[in-house]
Image (cartoon, rainbow, N blue to C red):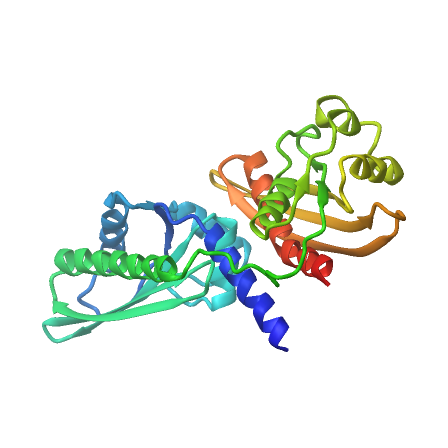
Length: 320
């Protein structure tokens, strides 16, 4: 149990350190309005306009969100659960989801603002009580949402990005990593994302990582004649001094399109093979999805996410 907790902790830090903390992409879902004196359409339009003016925020187009809600048969106006938010945010490439409610009470507006981090599921809420002035209230609502998003990012920043080294006293075996990939829309890709992600992780975990000789990977690194020929790959890994070959395949395919966003799904399969006897000592696979304005990049992101899910498992096997 203790080892499992430690592994989970390392993976959590590894994932957090991989999260880009640049400008936020957010979804603003129209707020629930309870008050005859409040023009719901105008209020939400002003909030959207204020959010879009922030230099640190990129607002997902409302039409894209509406289309996605219709296709998923989901209700607007904040009536979404955490799973809905996570799925929608992932499909639209968003970091945060903003919603809330407005209630009219005499000459005051009681406003609840809620932000949800798509990646971590962390919820932040704040209540403001302002004068019943539509423009001013909408501006303050937008600023409150921005402040909540900043606090979420600050919380992530406060987590140490230092990677905890697994069993630091244990000697690491030398490994070679080879994971060719294909995206269905373009079957010849360079810079294999899964291989790069695994290499980065194993180097961070102090494993000696060897590169296969250029001849071993075929012309232009495409592995035309070696895909599926495990014996030749193992021999190539052994020649460069690797005790184990981490070998696999990665594939991604575009799925849905929402406005300017292209989404992809990916699958990564991994095997750890001993170069001493050509035996497979471990095998596993993982799926993931991602979104981007460029289809190929969304496929790369999806492959990276799937590779991250397997990295720690593979390292743990080798350390045992």
